[in-house]
Length: 127
Image (cartoon, rainbow, N blue to C red; front, side, top):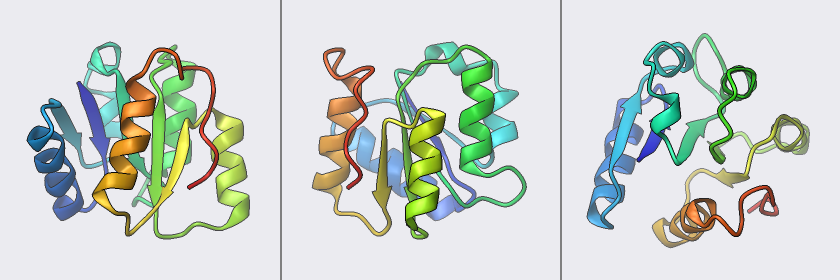
């Protein structure tokens, strides 16, 4: 199952519908605290997370889930794709950083890589 964390409901719904269309179950969260308080972290094989969210950012959420021992690959998505943010996300353990807007096929490639056990531990280059 893939966790989707984005404060924009339209993005959460679009990603959940897209994942369902390719046969992947997901669970959506409107914020980092919602994810962290869900008790579901051990169930996720991957997380797709927006960087810019109200309250707790994606980067802060990524650090918090790593502190909780969750090693699931995290794909950061953002329309704000400056180099410093990408570097901080990589240093915090992000698997990949994908720019919004993204094409379904490009995100699908990153998701499939993240789900491939052979790729775990080897972050993808920035998209």
